[in-house]
Image (tube, rainbow, N blue to C red; front, side):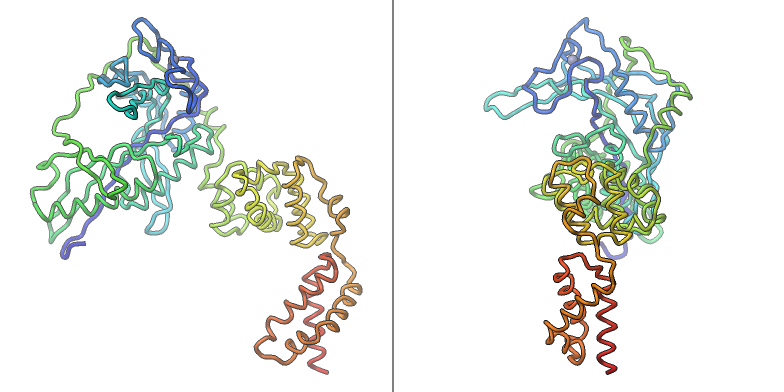
Length: 498
Ligand SMILES: [Zn+2]
């Protein structure tokens, strides 16, 4: 921050998301990660003369789903355009894209803003296009081309420049990833390069009554959320410094730039200036039919959309009193969230129990196996039975957890938790007389702790908890810790009075 200046960072994002279709966008070649180079190709995606592309309906529908989930309008009429450029990994010398008529436009996504509250990021457009191949430079003295990726369907999403902090950009990008996975339209795996980000960044600088804007930097091809955040952070400082050093560094006077992110040096590096707009010679692809969508079909797709992750999280908080952090953890995986909703069936009390059972040892066990809770034990009826048993006091919370872990460790898809609790002798004792007898026994065997509870000011607070633990031990884990606690408190009171 330079004295006397106020600055505001302005960021718009271009994001490419690879769609999880079985085959490519305009041919029947399989989409497979890690297949042998050039083994997933045909005359269409090799760009051989005379071959004819045919649109993959599944890719188009997935794009419409995604666009609708971002609150976009869907074009009633859209078409395919050729974007000409020459690269070794693009044998046709043009990419099939959508130029002036994107399939989705004028949408918005709301994020949790760094400044607090919710912030709306407008979506300018979402269009479908094909990916190019890959140039490989790992053999000395030559470059190789792998065309397995050519023709992979990509949804390009372009936001309006509504993002003002690096953290908000991070939030938007991670939110988009969750949404894509929820919708089932993309695996959105960062490791497999399913999402690529290109932030356009500049800074508005105010000094006295004057306002200046730095030229726009487009940081190319970022492939991690962290890189997005760090590059924006870096650029918003670098551009102000450059302006302070040279006041001619302003929008319109200095050229916009393409830059790359160097993660090792934690800085962006100049690639080329964008003096002249590129001439891609866009024109409609004569080999492909335009696409029309009916209102009825769009509404049908819309009605099949799942509840969005952020909406779902907020509902778990407001309807069931979950903490936002717990709700976030449950919603992070759609399968887990579906299991949660199916098991508790709108019951607020069960929701609390379900939360602690799901997010405790069960989640740890699933994480250790790199799975989700719902893939290890997917049966909602079983979960509901167990959660009810704990809620009704048939088994105590720790016995509930023990049963759950045992079920998850086994390979059981269908478990009768009540039978299991009986088999393990874990049904909680409701007999207060029996519990009082255990308390009596523990008081005799732990005179020191009883003395602490009565008259040691340092240990008086902790001693009842210790005694409760002893009673639970003596009972073999089937006493009701709540009742035991009450009995112990009453007994101590009685002894103090006597
Ligand atoms: Zn092909």
